Image (cartoon, rainbow, N blue to C red; front, top):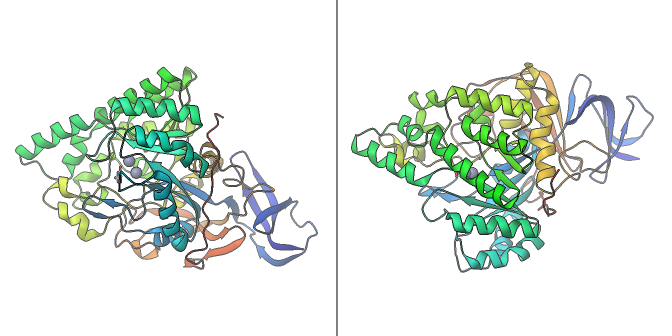
Length: 458
Ligand code: DUC
Ligand code: ZN
Ligand code: ZN
């Protein structure tokens, strides 16, 4: 006797679409059967006309992050609740230490205890290395043992950024340990130069956020980071890649056989930099900023071609009143936008409209994230033995995104007004129903910390 049977749906994975009934037992997918196969279950759900998809993984969130003079609005409860209501069943949070003296493992344990009490979805941590030095490098083996196998560095932000020497040493050390280095790449000196110049000229609208971090400023940093990784033949994952020249550098390195991976953000696919000229342009201020139309087109092309591996959100929203700090000065706008609930529905809607294959959306939002970050095949696919993290998707449901339909703590969304064709109607985590038809049905504290394996090249 199964616990749950989802009948008559079309199962979509990264590699195929199949008509199948999905049976769940003890939180795992127990069988994929021909439609109508004889089976008994405690509960049967009809999914006729619906798609059955893996729950998505959001590799890039900043929950309850002290940043930009405040704290990002969504905590572990509201961020994961929101995720589930958009079909995302696991989030990765960038755990960011505050006290440089505290052992990294102690910090992670503290953060895990805080998250465990709140999370509604499963989750994992990437560890931000914001206090570069020998101390953190020497602690990485213990961090790996805790199942935290990816390390993030910034090449920008005072008090967070690392220098080239540390970055190089980290690439070396991480390669030796089986970790994966994730980098936020922008050129800080050039940003500072432009910001100072625009301030002196009184150019303080959100457009100048884009202008001070325009294409070449990100591209130069991407190229340098790729250069170091190539020198060491070390794997490198570039987070939120937003510019055309950076994608071209990534593609060139991959063509030479180097293990350089990249993520983009749905905002960079949806909008171009003209959004910063809008009256509410400050709401779209994130870093790296949304780039020009040529970059947007290139990102779409690279995503479809497979040179961009993943799409993740950089979910780091702030309240409208906080965004308004920058009404007359873009440098005062806390950087970050929402996305955790809308990413999967947006990309699936693009598939539904014929702009990308459904399989590619599943690959970049579910399967690649799990594989690259060491939690496959437990997560990221619909297969016997995997966790029953499932989404029932209605391809006929028309939805216009407004902040009212979302489930986070934010009071505005950068996805406002986006028209979607198709939407998740049910979400299951390890076989338990947590969302149905707009309603959150899960509970805080029910999510689990997922220990991850070391990085392995595909
Ligand atoms: N960029 C953002 O926009 N927010 C949080 C951190 C970051 O790098
Ligand atoms: Zn970043
Ligand atoms: Zn980020």
